[in-house]
Length: 333
Image: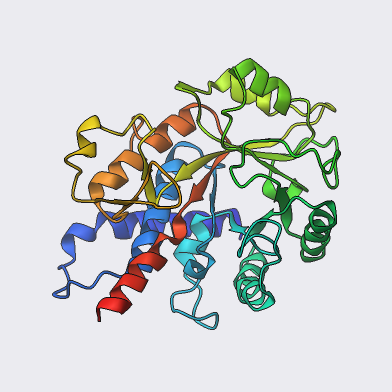
């Protein structure tokens, strides 16, 4: 999308948001969970672009939010489209049923309908497959190459390592990468626990030639600084890369600085049950203003800290949290 069209939609959204207080509340208690997540992402984008017009916003999964209805033939949500720069999709070809297991072709086809629509409308696609067998890694790379998607084959579901295979990233190059359209590959490494220090982590990353990096804001309890992010931008071969920061918007994490100890016994109303598959992660009512304030809107918010550290953009996880709320609603009806 042309940058001036994008600016128009972002400004339109900002105007609509500022007028919310003048709109009477619906008499229905029904929550539109998809629209609430769209609006949250739009608010994140609006705040980020008020500080850095080139800041990238990429939601992971939840590709269905691209359209206003519940099927691929629904009208595209233009404000949402203008608020994001790409879409990440896990398990596209491998990993949905288990690591190193091919995703059911019907599921892949369903997702591809949305991802191709996104690509046709100017968005970049980042595909993450969870596979460790070299033949399956190669197959994942070839499928994504044919689709012109950026791809990463993670051999650890924990995303805590630089894979040994392939030894050279697909389409390795020494270019200076300033936009998503210039990137040919990426590394997704958000759990740096195996690295003893920032120096060790930075040295490991700068020994690679990936075009794009997705990492966490913290290593241990320390935030990455602007100088450290600048170091991480440098490829080993002299080129440079984009550096994005992981941010969970659909779950709260009890190991984050925003977590209050009293929440263990007396959680706020928007904090729900723990994710049984990921210890320390808790579902949230992501439309709640208190949760949104933690995530975005000020220099003290999580997004504010990310921007202050000099990242090129943000990679939003649990954008697809709306599915669980919709499923619960369906069961209760």
